[in-house]
Image 1 (cartoon, rainbow, N blue to C red):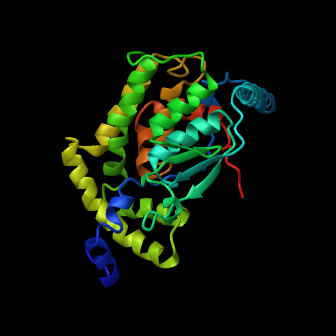
Image 2 (spheres, rainbow, N blue to C red):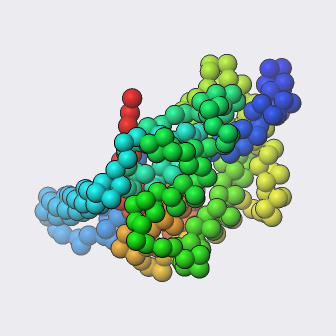
Length: 315
């Protein structure tokens, strides 16, 4: 990683072109996974007949999946009656954790939306806007910016009868996501050269880059962000980035107080915020380590099933 081609070196030196614009770009994957049934449902009793045991497991799994699907359909119909815009467009970086917060909200509420992937170097896709960051959401032509503000605005359109308090549990944990959890991501996904390359391999594959930009961004960007992550550790007083990530995951599980979700029987805005921010790292090395070394995996899998398939409109 210390050796960078002349082109990459020039790219790093002109940090205004790549570095700041990529600094908020986190690697993300949307590959779904499934746990063994014994883990997901707390274990099945041992039965001497394998075929019978398999049949019971199949029934349990099918019933749970069917119940989850039915719940999603009911929730989607309820939301469609309250909020049914004609066109929703999200301007984003595929790997941005703040963009993924918004997508988690849209997906959970089954709001169909189009995606415009923004080139982080030219940003030509959002030149029409005075706001030069992502996410930007337009709802029937109305522009919304800042992930938390976007979510609050959409929530109020859907639930005008509900008023949120700045002191309630949900708001407290949403602030924790924005002010603490999100700052742990970069130091973890760029903590060493191999993980930095892993992250940028995804970013450059799924982001809006030209062929030349993709080549330069993968190696120059990974190198730049490796050093940026060290500065971020110092800025946010992080000594051991993995330990800090594990601690945050355990803190969140403790906050659940053995409830399925912070919202109780169904996710609230804090659940969706944590889930959205963690999606960029879940299947990277850092995310796998987090799930393997903390108790957050059960909640995360539950959220994956509850949020369901993306409601993105594929063009």
